[in-house]
Image (cartoon, rainbow, N blue to C red; front, side, top):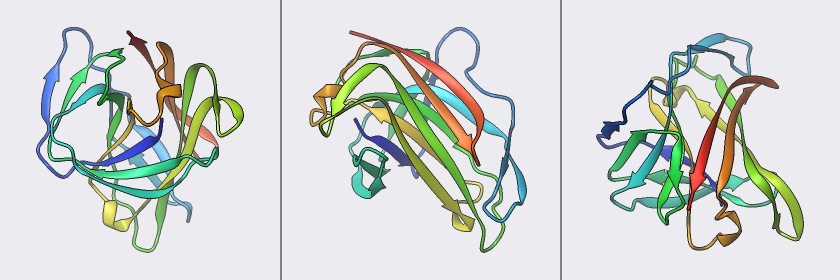
Length: 182
């Protein structure tokens, strides 16, 4: 399954579940030039895609799998840690980027630990990982980092505990566990 960068350009419909919000405290990050910034809003959730959007490959992860940029019409986000193993559904986080100085960029390393190792491209792996780079033009935007169940990657149809980890300059910023159930 590919790690997807979701460019949220339409209004999002929020359907909070009962219980505590899945938000982190503010995250201290550093740009490539060393500017100290804060990501004030990171929310972990499940999403259901309502309108299929444009899919554009923007790079490859460390296993050679494509990383996609999406422009979704609408998605519904649910604050829950229990994810159904269902085609088109996914999970991950939304974050609001800070003001990134002109000519600078913010790099986040994303690691999705799988419930168990799977064979991908002839190799066994227990994670999906990649880097996302945001420049000045992304300042203040809401971005999503999601894992989505798609028909072209059946090896990733895995029930169990998935863990999303976000890093900046080698430092773990936050992590969150999701339980995927059949």
